[in-house]
Length: 95
Image 1 (cartoon, rainbow, N blue to C red):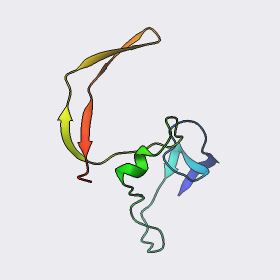
Image 2 (cartoon, rainbow, N blue to C red):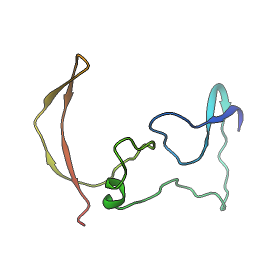
Image 3 (cartoon, rainbow, N blue to C red):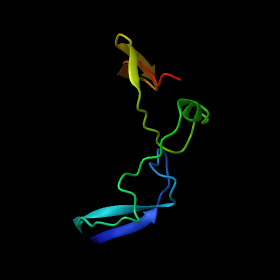
């Protein structure tokens, strides 16, 4: 890989617990490589209980996979003078 920068991973909704991240440039080139030491998929699976145990302002982005159990009608949410349409999804993992 070439033409990239390593920077501190700060701010809201970080996708990894790692303290650094890669910043790709327009000229960045990436080439596939077979390496058995580096995991092919960067997933960390947790139970819904572990996800719900995080505090409200948890600093890492959490992606949820589950079975759709319910869907609300569209609603409008007003915050700081801005109207946002929302739909509430209910997910289950059968636990």
